[in-house]
Image 1 (cartoon, one colour):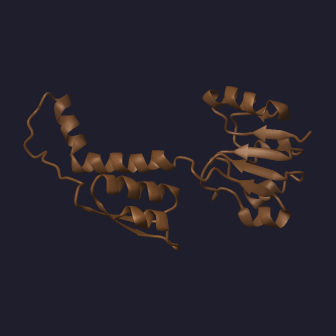
Image 2 (cartoon, one colour):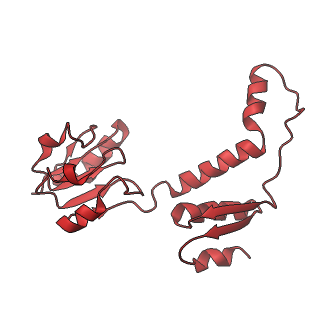
Image 3 (cartoon, one colour):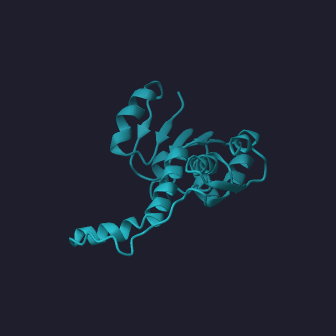
Length: 183
């Protein structure tokens, strides 16, 4: 059986991972894969990390049996992809990780600015409930600019459209489904 190590596991994830991967008998650890820890795992064949383990050529070289990396994130810029390709190490990611969460957070920030949320909360904490100077502005009718219409960008555009905004987006390829939603 392949040796599997799951790094950067938080308490709330542990039970799920143990259950879902019980057939593989994974080693589950909260530590990052880094110079200080790599020596313990030299015989590993499959690893799963989050974004805090920077998987450089130098680090990966210390795992001669490694065949597969599963990052539990959308991005994989923490992994030396060129080196993995050269060594035949397969890398997978979660392409929709946080796609709605990040898009919604984008709008939470936009609403906080447009509705002057932080100044109004600060005033309320001081017992000042005056609305003077706290007039915000509507997002409705505004133009939203989005660079990149991957999973997150597409969700940001869709939320903007639902707020009645005009969405201008740039991406290296056209998304016909998203273009159809703007009318």
